[in-house]
Amino acid sequence: MTAVSVPSATTSFDLGPARALSCRECGNETPLAPEYACYECFGPLEVAYDFGRVRREDIESGPQSIWRYRSLLPVPTNVASHPNLEPGNTRLIEADRLAKALGLRKVWVKDDTGNPTHSFKDRVVGVALAAARELGFKVLACPSTGNLANAVAAAATRAGWQSVVLVPSSLEQAKILMTAVYDGALITIDGNYDDVNRVAQELAAENEDWAFVNVNVRPYYAEGSKTLGFEVAEQLGWRLPEQIVVPIASGSQLTKVDKAFRELGSLDLVEATPYKVFGAQATGCAPVATAFKAGHDVITPVRPDTIARSLAIGVPADGPYALDSVRRTGGTIEDVSDEEVVEGIRLLARTEGIFAETAGGVTVATAKKLVETGQLDPDAETVLLITGDGLKTLDAVSHKVGPKANVPPSAEAVINALKG
Ligand SMILES: *Cc1c(COP(=O)(O)O)cnc(C)c1O
Ligand SMILES: [Zn+2]
Image (cartoon, rainbow, N blue to C red; front, side, top):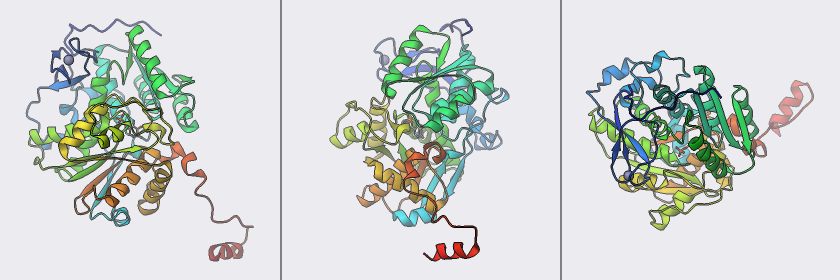
């Protein structure tokens, strides 16, 4: 690795509206820097802002990517002028056929499979890289459950940076190849994600010139998830939905979608109407759902065992904050079996023509369960976040779907097969 100067905490950085880092536990503030834990209490740090006046017109006339929201993100004003993957601006689809199948009046699907590396992780990595550049880094790194690996390797290459990506060796083949093809340094580790994450924490402490997107620059990275909330609100015509179902891995995305909705309301970009945030997990890795149902504030770690590998974080860093968001807004958290996940993938595909990865199956199946158990209001407008592409997890459905028939090359054989 090329040595770069270690970023200094005393330099002042141009990170747009970001003012400081503040501790989520004790509120202590520190200057903007590549830090992630509070000096006072070791609590996680979060970006604090001084937003100027932000107008809808300025956002609407911005780039067709997450950078249209740069005045709400910890990134330099000129962020869009550096080569980047231009993530975001994905479709919000009116999903009437899915709504009917689920027994809901109105459903919108936020289809984040349309991002450059086919998952929502391009959003968080885009913001992490932009902040990391300003903070003086030149190497992008991460521990990943798969999608983050794809996003980091691609974004680093596009920016002309080196990348170091660590993943569990049991990862889906598609996610390994989709990372390796960008030619960064990909290391597979014999262990689960939580083992990989522990190794990354050690490496981040020893290699201060590596920006581990979800470790030492995590406060900036996490803000990228707000763009999902911003986009949903803008695409609905600058208003908030009544219910939103969000998949949970570390829990970061869920808390930031909530934060985005609150910021839009407090900046008068939307009317601050009430909304409920619902969390979705796979039963084989449901530490946040379990804590929610038990009424606990602390999360008991689990050893993941589910086909939803992109959500398989047994020690979810933002789990307690996800619980806060869900409880404050009046939502709930449910979990679904691997069998239901596969059915969720198939239901979304056959009703709306969207092929989601297992995390999307978790969201759809959880929505179904939430309706059936009376937790989702069938009359309230509902948004489902579909965060990754089914081409990355083909194994999940390979034993369930396939050709109707294999026939000799004759029209008659095809007709007969269609009758059968
Ligand atoms: C990472 C990921 C999530 C959620 O991530 P959080 O850690 O909870 O922010 C959701 N869906 C997919 C496909 C992901 O890769
Ligand atoms: Zn603190």
